[in-house]
Length: 178
Image (cartoon, rainbow, N blue to C red):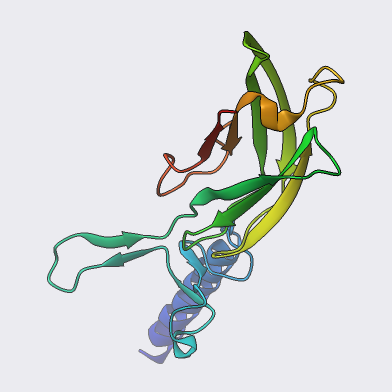
């Protein structure tokens, strides 16, 4: 009887060790958080810990309450008198998860009344939830030297190549008409 109990305990211990190594090998998309969890947004109670589930289920069984996703948004842009072929763009991640590195595309669609399709891209870093940054986009390589960017029609699009799965893709664009 003792021998069977000892064999059973040894088997359970071996099974537990293999389960632990399988859990440890699971890839983690969010640094510092377990698989399926995301960093806690700063506006939530710090007592919740550094990480929280990627999805929160309703206690009444009504499904998922909130999916934790990033949401890149062009908050605004402004021109500079000192650099007339450039624009400073402010981008914010107003979502609840980290936005991985992506890009910002400037597409000039009209110069001096003539339709064109000239593009350039700027690489964007990763954004933490609720982080914003300013980026200077220099369009001199796609504009004639006598044209200021503010005198053209253009479109700015954050995450233009759809690298980031966002909660709202519709707020990634800003349009300018002279």
